[in-house]
Length: 117
Image (cartoon, rainbow, N blue to C red):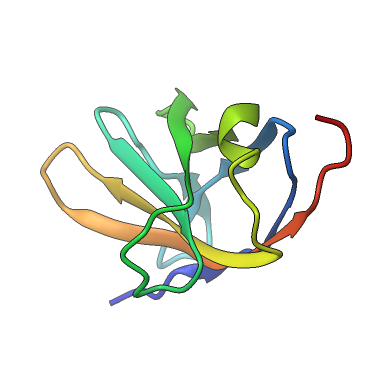
């Protein structure tokens, strides 16, 4: 079983935050190839702590180049504006076309409070 990659995020409260990531897999011969996310669905949420029942915000997850292994996470300004905490946690779960769920990334979210409203 693979463990999620640790990838801390920094978000400025009230701004749109965009993260574009590429995933590849390593073959037995040492070469790499992109992960094919065709037909996949992503889910990524921010909470104060992993077991906190309340979601603070949610990323929009898309696959602009699914065959090339590219995933895009966008936290719209209206969602980042809800983040009043200085730090939180998130993860990125992707459900493949066969219904298998894998958490690819997890980490902390550091929020810089916004000034302009």
